[in-house]
Length: 177
Ligand code: CTP
Ligand code: MG
Image 1 (cartoon, rainbow, N blue to C red):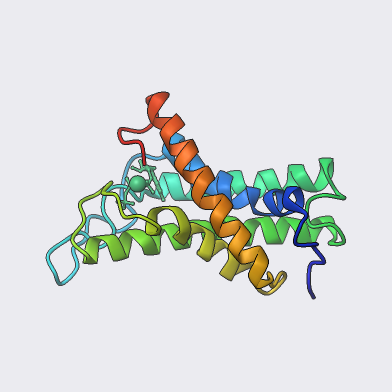
Image 2: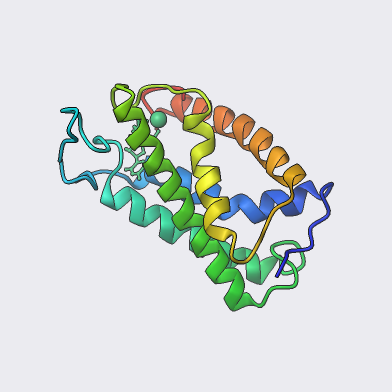
């Protein structure tokens, strides 16, 4: 089943990915407490994921992204995943959120293996792995076109840069990335 989205329909595209954005942003505010790696170290002596990936942040991200999907499904039925039943929209929003968290966590795993400290800046990985995770997890319901993937990658890169800079200015983040 494909989601019939015209490539030029940027608003629908942005609304589609919004649960993943919300899932990715929520841990910055809600995160804290134990790391999901339980403080464990990899064979290279570094943390498996690091202290920046917490259970509380991850669960709150999945929950917030899913809730936003339900809200969009109710308030903007013709814009958010038009054509899908509300229950399916809920499942897709959940998959997008879960995938965003998984992609972001995978990113931290790679960063630690590359030797970057917690919170270190790695261009593209920081901005795009959560998007990749979200899109992969949503594949059973929505296979994006190449153009849609390119548009989402470009938009996500810019929006991520902008929102993280803003989060830094608002003192929600220590670093502007
Ligand atoms: N966060 C969290 N749980 C997650 C993701 C993020 O608690 N699953 C919180 C952490 O407080 C983290 C902050 O959100 O420091 C910013 O997230 P992010 O930039 O993804 O993590 P970094 O601290 O940069 O760590 P890493 O180098 O592993 O990406
Ligand atoms: Mg970071």
